[in-house]
Each structure stands twice: as structure tokens, then as C-alpha cells.
Length: 226
Image (cartoon, rainbow, N blue to C red):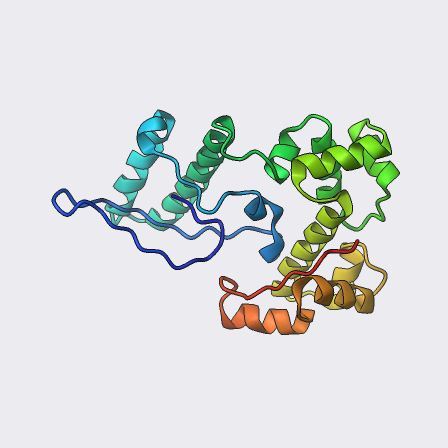
């Protein structure tokens, strides 16, 4: 069971047999607007008996969790990362994820445009340039992108840019440097878009992020603008 977003929950196991649990918290890059998180169902539930490929990794996890050996935490961190990749692969194979950036990235045409936005958020992308990356006409690209990813190309680009900005804020970068890195003319332009989309200024968001250790920062996203 995987919860893409923080939420209160309670697990009930069989009273007679009990249950073994191994839990983890996964931190993603690109801030709270990470499109990967947005593309995952809430919650993602996959029966283990239907996923035999997970068994070796799970056995290693339980072994490391109870070992107490040096390097235990580092080993568990890497195993959880690999387990997460396996879960996503299986969910896509079983069509439990049918829209969002994961489906877009797996598309031979859209994937090229999405990867271009990811690698170069500082670029002043036009619809024509993105369509060329995908090898499609502008109209077809815009319609197909929205159909598969669930939002317009420029709404997606805005969310990606602001997610990168959030990560850079946490790392101590100045607004001037962040603005240049994510495609905005200056700190004022970045602050305006950030406030419109997130519902608070970058400095307010950072203060709340630090207060809550980045895990339960309340967001009130508004319609995005590129």
C-alpha cells in the first residue's frame, strides 16, 4: 500500500495471525508539485500475491530491518527505492495508472517533449517547440498532451518549474537564482506565479515547509499560468 500524499490512516491486521510491517517515507524531488505524485492513485494498493517479482526484494527488506548490522539503514533506503520502482512498473502494467506524467513519459512522442521540459525548465518553451520535440502538429500535440497527462502542456510546465523552485528554496538558493533557473525573468515574476499557484509567497511556503519538515505543507493550488 502506497500513499502518494500525506494522510491519516490506520491498518488493521488479522487478530489471530497478526501481521509483519515494513514502512518507509519517500521524499521526491521537484517539491510538493511533483507531477509523479499527482499521477498516482490515492492510495495505490497492489496485492503481494499478485506480484511475485517483489518477493526477493521484500525478503531482503525484512532481513535488513531485523539485522542490526552496520549499513542497515543505507541498505534499506536503496531497497525501498527499488521496491518503489517495481510497484510503479506493476501498477502501469496492470493499468492502475492510466493518465498523468508516468503515462506521458512512456509515450514515444509525448515523452520527448516532457523530458525536454524536465531537462530545461529555464527555456522559454513555445507550443510549436514542444510539438516539434514530439514530432506532432501544434493542435494535435496540445490535445493529445491534455488527454494523456490530464493538463495542458503549459500548466504542466508551470507545475514542474515551481516544483524545481521549491526544491531550490529548500536548498537555500536565492529567488533571483531560482527565477533564472526555472524560466522567469526575475524574482518578482517568479513570486507572482508562485503565489497564484501555491496560494502563498515563496518565503511563506519555505517557512511552513521548514516548520513541518516538508511533509505536511498545506497547499492551495490555483489554476496555473506559464
